[in-house]
Length: 146
Length: 152
Image (tube, rainbow over all chains, first blue to last red; front, side, top):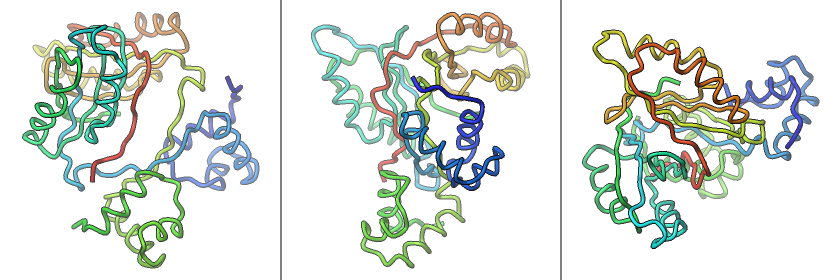
């Protein structure tokens, strides 16, 4: 694991607040020159701490009004391999997040949909037909607080 | 704002690689770089592109344990949601907090250095939060897919 000092952590937190900052702006935010900040950012990227940058789009503006978190339990463990389930669930474009977890569910999913009837379609045709799927619990997101 | 087919094409490329320069984006979409720049500018100004974010590997930062808590609140208390959320936001190890409609009311992510650290946060900070009636925990084993890409 990469050793991180106070300055590295300050850089990461500046970038977490605004991922669009360039090295000059990051340097300014943490009290460093542009080249020094650039070298540290580069090191964080090469060391695998900063994995990349992505755009954050407004879901509603693009017609996605519904986000649902699903808890999925596999029905026949052993008979269907986890890999089959994972491969199939990752191929669903509306599924943004697939996490293998320990607890009352086996997997946690985050699904985006245009509206509730679109979600119903995804749930019935794509999720409920996944290999090995058992119990599914849906929680519709009302708001994101943090 | 109205997002047309060309905007969607731009956004699809930007979603795949948020680090694309305007020239690269123009080349991939077949637009002139001027047209490309104007469209991206407009998508940003109207808030379709909200911003850019970095993807951080929390394990590489020394946070080996990630737990998702699913919390049911005691809704007989009128201000249960507000006071719970206000207090939860003060815990630095709490990442995302979402309110839900379903079997549980709140879900939130907790990151800790190790299990001992998690237990300390759980006992001293989480269980001290107001109006909790039930807590369920799911511990992350592995992340199989994590993308913000929208099927546009």
